[in-house]
Figure 1: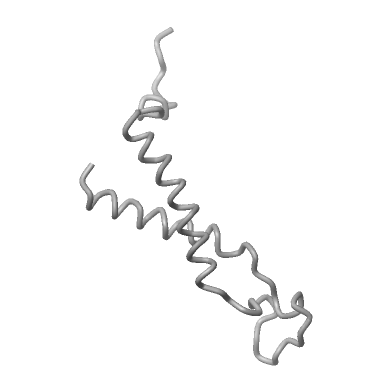
Figure 2: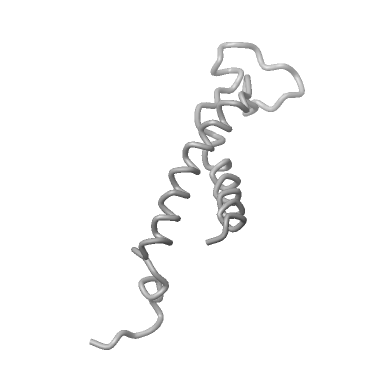
Length: 90
């Protein structure tokens, strides 16, 4: 696999993982024990920390991409395993 392909696939893993990691560890203003400002949604985060979210995303996406790449190298799960519609001879 070329380096450009590796970087592109990792970027996709990172972007998808961002949406998975984003809601974890978020506290609303009410949960933080402060008064909600008029005009803000009740579900809005009290203090959004992009650094923490980016670090968590990087760690999780690196692990997931590592598993993907290991599967690419060693072929643990191939297209033949995922093809459920084709009847297999017994």
